[in-house]
Length: 246
Image 1 (cartoon, one colour):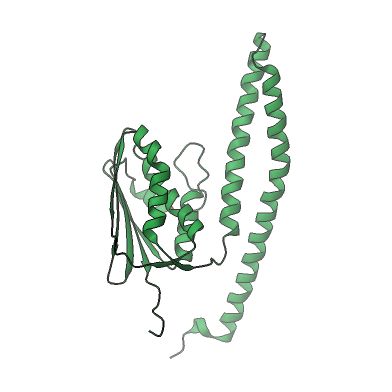
Image 2: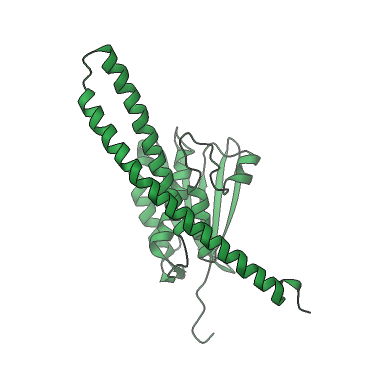
């Protein structure tokens, strides 16, 4: 029996909604790009002004320098927000090719190793050496995994352990990140993948939604378990590439 969702009328409506979504996404991306130009000019002039006022010679110059630095900080926050938004808006069909999940995991962990050591975080790797390949877009997958690892590190400002495990499962290839950080309450866990939702000062609220969007584009699933005060576990499961002739 054919469902209503496959009727010609509903297919037409879905196509129209998709076209409207793409048009809005394109408009939003163009607007964000246009905002970046005057913002860059503001940042450049504030940097020049800060150089002229530093070191301040009077109390008035000292106050002016403080206000200048406030504007600089807010410009940087806007710049980061726009960069995250453009990455989020521009993500489209990825070029998925067979690749090594372990290789991307190692790249991410090597990149954050110095910061983890500085914070007293031990990174424990259990990477299956016989792990099957997955279909992936290497750079975007790296970006998503890096976001998840940075999120885990930020949850352990006073040190802890981050355990990373890859393994073959019945249905695909799994990757787990388990941290001993602050964890999340139920509300945060419920909304963590919502765009612009953030519990961090100055956060754009787009990092985790972008990571989720990239993982979805890899036809993978993501599961989150967290307990306040005890830590968080992210589990990703990627499908295995279809066998030729299978």
